Length: 277
View 1 (cartoon, rainbow, N blue to C red):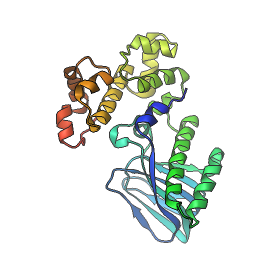
View 2 (cartoon, rainbow, N blue to C red):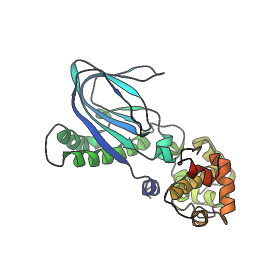
View 3 (cartoon, rainbow, N blue to C red):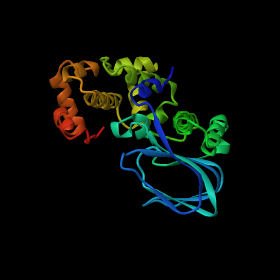
View 4 (tube, one colour):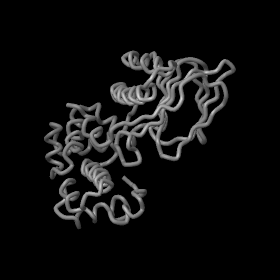
């Protein structure tokens, strides 16, 4: 079972490379689009600074992932640091559970991620060469690298709580993947427990301990996330209601208002900016 497929169907990872070369001076990073960052330090010594956090000193090849918008700065030593950098969009602003479940920053030494070697080699080769089609090649390689990094994070237990941590439990993963794939299905706690091969009580307790919310609360939040993406696509609310498991537009509107904080109409009028999922 592909536990990411249903999420990537709705939130395909996107990347845009914006720097490749030797960084010789202190530089700050921020963007107005709410995107995150994926940096690859090829060589050199680098200090990573963020407001309200301790500085992070790196002295070996490292992947630096910031899944959500994060103002930060890089300060290389006198010799400079070789970097390839991209902004990324994982759908965090739209409620993608993967983006929301990741820590604010992850620094992953490349020597601990040997399976990513071929992708890193291609990325660095493209980044430090001047070939036709370089931008497109870098963007696609960063997107593939992002998928590989997420696989590594889950497989290596870099997160201990939340949805990504729960995916390391095969029983919970079956239930979570089913909710992601079929938000229109009338899932009950008993249905999900059966999928997990657990008793209702044990499933509910195990799920909440791992994810931090009850299974039905998670399902509701996921449905509202899907509803938001469909509202942005200008689908009629009656159709959206059936696509996310509600019998009527009124039932969807009540739940949407309770979870998001405003009605679907008000949310759209606000440009889709209010999101409590």
